[in-house]
Image 1 (tube, rainbow, N blue to C red):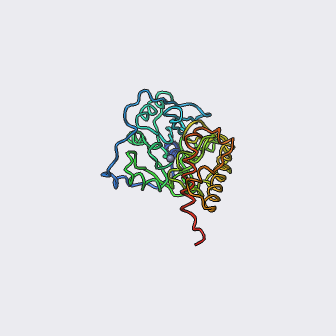
Image 2 (image 1 turned 90 degrees about the vertical axis):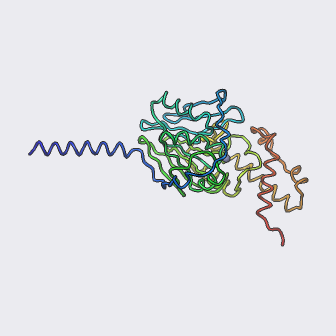
Image 3 (image 1 turned 45 degrees about the horizontal axis):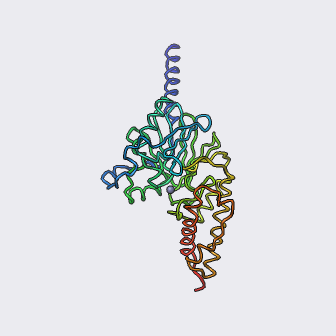
Length: 319
Ligand SMILES: [Zn+2]
């Protein structure tokens, strides 16, 4: 009798231990029925051509947090990687031709599989390669607003397994990863990804590291961009991966906010003064500080053009 009671307690403890280890990996995302999209049409994958000479890397930020890179110089794309004993979480694989390397590198160095891939937004240059990890069993996660452009633009990447509206939490190997939608900013599908245990943030393409925002602000929402930078300023983080170049700090994002607000105000004032585009782009004055930023020469006139379009689309004038 007594033995049986002890045995059943031991059984319960064992069952509890199994349950607990299974419960470590969890998320509160909304499941997507991927079967709905089984026959969707896809564009050719421009990142799939074998690229043995393309630079790639996986370097430690701190503790179990790493940063992967693919490409070199101005073409570098990056994302944070969390490695736990229950599997790894990878943000934005970026290229199909280096995704298998990243998978194999994580296996070789840490002896774990990739359990989650987070896609920060529905732009192919960041989310290509996710399908490689999904085929191996990883769950792909994105904001729910990413689903439409992935399907509609025929992007040859994974359909997400999980989506969310405002917030989502992933627990993996006892560590916590928080996904958050602030506002439409750089695309309307942006996710901010926080690693509270590491004071680290993934803020792809909305954040910069003394580097110019890309081109004519492709897929751009000015007001939500500023709102997002204000949100970043409130976070308890000291390392921000911007999806490119090198990691940044909150001071870099304040500098970016100053540049954006100043550019917006100048363009608005010039449009209100009746300047045509041909006059306006010559009239904008950019600070000596910003003139030192990465890619200033190639991007500054394009940035003015993108802001001119935004301002023109969002004013009524006197009539
Ligand atoms: Zn982008």
